[in-house]
Length: 557
Ligand code: GLC
Ligand code: MG
Image 1: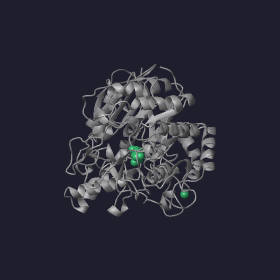
Image 2: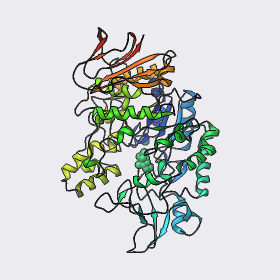
Image 3: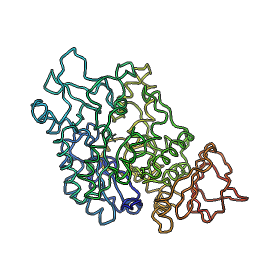
Image 4: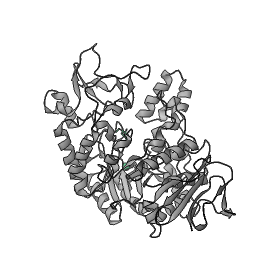
């Protein structure tokens, strides 16, 4: 396998609105990120992905871009962005931006021009169709945030346009070569600034199954999940390969795709040696327990389901390329609240979950706050919810007959807002995030969970993550940690998740996924104890005793 500059790195996602506010307006900003660069270096991360900071009405928190060439004033200026790229670069940190190109904002000038003249050239930038009151829509697909993918084109009564997400996010027509050329020009403009690369948003959606047509309805609204169309759409990789050729490859840029529902045979085209992306996120565990009726009917994963999904993903990418491994991101609840059995919030368990994920083959992505064990937040009422997706799922729950109280309780564990509360820097006011009023309520647990308390405390979640990152970089172990194969160990053992990483050395990674002690036979002699989330290790007679939630990385002799 050809070695790439990013293979051995640890990546970190920043949700800028909630990371650090430098000017007291309650909104995190780019200067806030600049101020925390020394912190990121101390943690040891070397790729930093920023969720969108482009100009945007923030209908979907910046995933609705109205100008790809400017920074939203709430986040700062282009000078701030240039400074961030330069200062990070000096510290050995590559900045990666979010690339939201399946759609733009309805306030983007392309869409405004399309509304002004749907038959003109900009009409072809979007999916616009003629439609008259009382007629059937071109298809019955449900948008990701609820309701039909079709809406009336602003200013018209006989035209409709397509949006896979919110109605303020009209889909760009990738079939139009002019659109693609405009997007590639913009990507290169950013890469020429010295950006490390991009995280590519919602990219699987750019290829529509055309002509539009209905699929069998899967809810009482008569609509069907848009994912049915993704199963049918062919040829997305022709677009992606063209994009890679025109932009990423000539810059040797890093690219990580938000890809889901890919077909197994397509994996080599996505993340293989000559694939269109460097890597893509593994979302397989995210879909465990998901019910087509909605969040209110969905279940949390069990440890066994989690383990099975992760091992299956490791098998799929073996010999092909690297997945990017996560326990959470800005679209998911906090991993420690989602994957650990209900109520289990001990530091040991948090470390175990993080360690099991971090040591997998692939690129580890930490999400801001993960490194201090941030947890899901508390919603006192639906008024506390900001996320459009949660608001939609709440309505779906009410429509299914739940009371308001039940509906809130049912959607809360899945809310994207859980990950979007401000970073907990300290036990001071607003968790040290802002001197003003935070745009979103701080998680009330911040006096207990915050960085200031953990920094320098050897048994903290934070110092544990630092030691994982250091192991990944260490000259003795990097080869195995980065390139070694994954092989499950005792996969049938319930609530034990263990695997080998086999490279020039052999590591055994093991986590006891339950609140009871257990014994695990050892497949060989222990050569070295590299990581232990608890103070002690008890090994005798070819076995180790694992305390509740104990996590170990051992080198076998
Ligand atoms: C991706 C983003 C999510 C956003 C959606 C639409 O899934 O991660 O936050 O809402 O795309 O852009
Ligand atoms: Mg601010």
